[in-house]
Image (cartoon, rainbow, N blue to C red; front, side):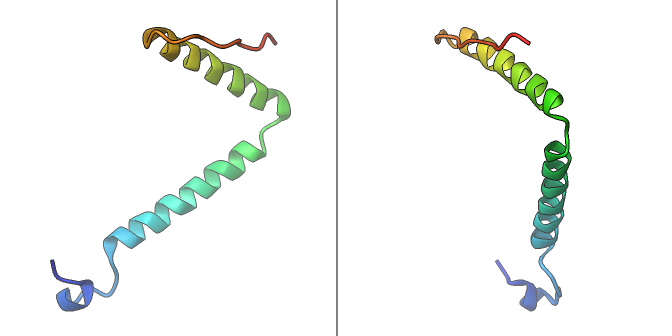
Length: 68
């Protein structure tokens, strides 16, 4: 495999993609951090439900889902 300098490319396209993904990831984290507390709790409860469904399907013990 040839390096980008051997190909005449000035920048690696993979590094551009990773930079873009990193920016999107940061923006998503900021968006989640700015959610109201009540919305964050609702997200946690939904994740608990998903976790329990996956545990049941795998034959594992399920956990408690918070009641809100």
